[in-house]
Length: 304
Image (cartoon, rainbow, N blue to C red):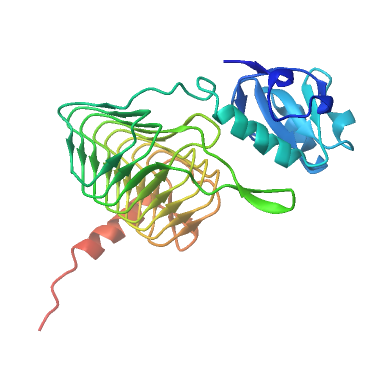
């Protein structure tokens, strides 16, 4: 669905300098189509000039002349506030980010009586098991054979705060969570939905331990092992067959290649190549790391 800026409610039409049709919202580095975004700082002008998915920009009077003339333009003294207002308004339009429809729960799914399932925009396939006090919010798709343990929360808003009108403001999340076949999410883990459309996605046969936090728009591949109490921040991409030990902290927008391994309680602030390993903050030979882990799991008997 495309909507003209000039047709939107809640916007001062005098501020619409150049009209445009938009079909998504997002940050300057987002990957939506015909996207509306905000430019509040000239330091990000290069991101705007390099982007190919942007249709319109909300910006301040002093930056308005630097916006390319082929883009729609909305001018405001507080562009972030106007952008968030427009994002909220678009989120309320059925069919813009998604079409609302009754939730679908397969007869072969086993759902505990204390679990809570949203009435709209949830799809639960055959063979899914959902434990006590688990919460499945709107915009969640769970494929066959998934296991959701007690207290897990799937599809809540993630943590994204912008300053608008001088105050911190949470940004409404409008995307989905998509779990592939045979994903397991253990107790009290939280998986946030994507923020500007799209999806937070977990690949088939991936296992996620308890008390983990998976941020918005994270993409995790197949057959990954993510051990308990790990935090994966928003927009991070993790390949297939990745092993992440307990208590790790992964910064936002990180890329972790296929087959990588991350040692216990690591803080990851840079990309990790395919088949690499990280321990004590350093890249190490993966085979050496995995052999060390095997010895830790199977210690020799002590002599008496």
